[in-house]
Length: 157
Image 1 (cartoon, helix red, strand yellow):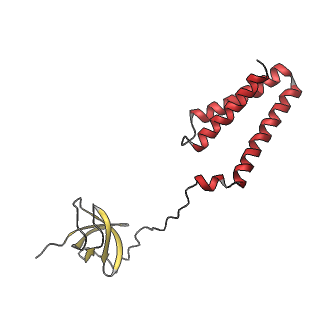
Image 2 (tube, one colour; image 1 turned 60 degrees about the vertical axis):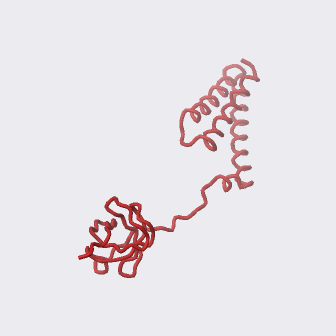
């Protein structure tokens, strides 16, 4: 095994880790293949060419890895691939004095079976009993469990 094979293994390791980080979700077989490829390449440099060549190979591989990370951070590569959105939604904060079973309201969005409803002049995320409820339908609170509000179509009495 010559320098060509050692360099090939190290480059294969970089490619595998690149694919693992940017293309394939999670950490799996390709990432492990990349790490194993690095280890074998550096080990072969030590075994065939001695301590000096092995150490230089290890340092060069580490330098290239650090340089690639620094370059990717400076060119804002991470910003291009990162999810950049905020989650502004929140769990229903149910004030039991203001919302009780039997209260009436109006579906603001289609409940299929989850949607938004205005009950007692406040907006809530509600869930029907499985049926679809159209927009502007009159609804009634049937059950309140923690932050889950179950509603149904208002029954005419």
